[in-house]
Amino acid sequence: MKISTIFTLVWLSAAVQCFGQEKLWTAADKQTTLDQLTRTRDAVVKETENLTPEQWAFRESPDRWSIGQIVEHLALWEIVWFRELTIGTRSKPQPELIKTSRPDSYYEEFIMEPNPHKAADISAPTGFIKGKDNLTFFLRGREQTLTFISKSEADMRALFEFTGTPDPRNMHQVLIYQWGHTDRHLRQILKVKSHPSYPK
Image 1 (spheres, rainbow, N blue to C red):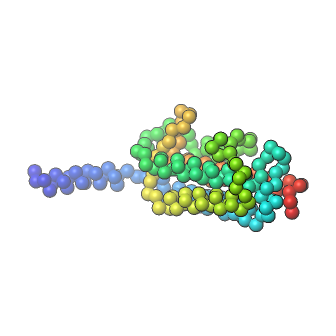
Image 2 (tube, rainbow, N blue to C red; image 1 turned 90 degrees about the vertical axis):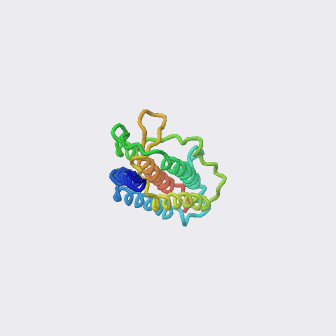
Image 3 (cartoon, one colour; image 1 turned 180 degrees about the horizontal axis):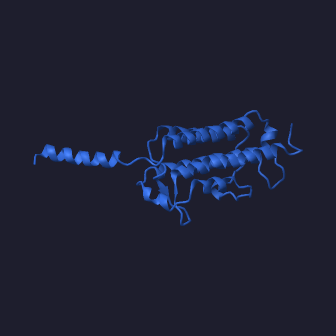
């Protein structure tokens, strides 16, 4: 058999494997993710861009976060999410894990539940960043993720990370956590703003 024929057969075999596998992460999944990341970004901007320094720094009580600290916390998590995303998309696809992983609804319900969560040490706000600089910090991270997702051709549902539980989660579910976490803290921002002593 000629070398050229062998090469052609090898190429065809690789092409069948590559193009024959339908992506689990659909165009609709990608667009929904981009829409949710954009929506929550814009909501944070709307709720904070015109705050005064006093409003940024107001705390309902000494043990509660100010809006500045909430947005700093969001910005710190943007770094964590992006790191998980970039590492996850460099890993080997494991579509077979979709059968044993939790459904998307689990992550949506967990992040949106009303019970308080304790922030991980890595994302605890320092309070060193003042006022609107917290928003700039958050937006930098969110734009980084939006750009990455827009350009990526990765199958986010076939790429998994292993957490401290028996249930691996795929990159699509990491992204659900990202925008859902923002929604959660948007509710917290609104609560701060509704306090009777909040500066007007």
